Image 1 (tube, one colour):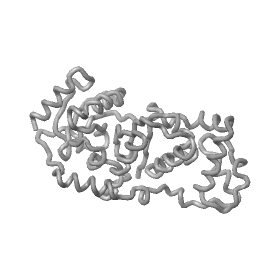
Image 2 (cartoon, helix red, strand yellow; image 1 turned 135 degrees about the vertical axis):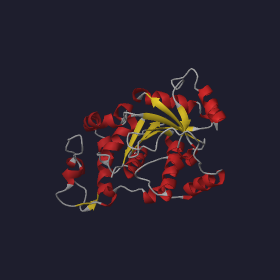
Image 3 (cartoon, one colour; image 1 turned 45 degrees about the vertical axis):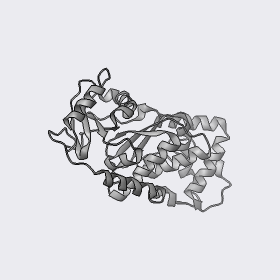
Length: 284
């Protein structure tokens, strides 16, 4: 294990990780401490580029809320190869979007309630766009009609977009006071979910479903997990969903993982095609 630390330390020479404290982390992982919070994306990108060399997937973590996230003098036993393989296989066979579901998906919109769902964070009253929708109806059905018609109205779309666009750049991300780089002892995206600490996936089964989300998002959107702050996940996205069905689907999945993301699904769908950073939020 000491040789592994020395090998990692040598791989970091000439990068922003050079010279930072490095040691054993939880469950067979490696921790690099004292990462500058203002350079966390830059540092993560360096570590991500080194995955084929170092054989470890990177994710940013913080010890602001978890004293267990500390460098250990001795290595802590992680999962065996067979255990990790079983975890990844269980993740692959899971159906995450049957379990991850935003509470708003079950809401019904009655007479007199349209404006409540058609105003959103932007404060622009879009109820006229869905004035002909037969009520009562489900909230997803109402919002899908609203979103589709919003796409056809350039002026209204631009007004909404100017208010919600801030949720998809990196500038929107949370930055804790203390940042560590956790290097996971696997190169497999699905298997990496074994170590991801997220309030929305506290059981082994839900963590397996989250692992499948990581794999699906990586495959479809080239969405790569940058940080896990316990109640928040932050992703760098390489392929943006296009406006319409792609953005609507991606927005629904993001909302399913994010009960504490304050935007309506149609607002998230407006924002997603314009940014390279996704933010997931689920707190107690």
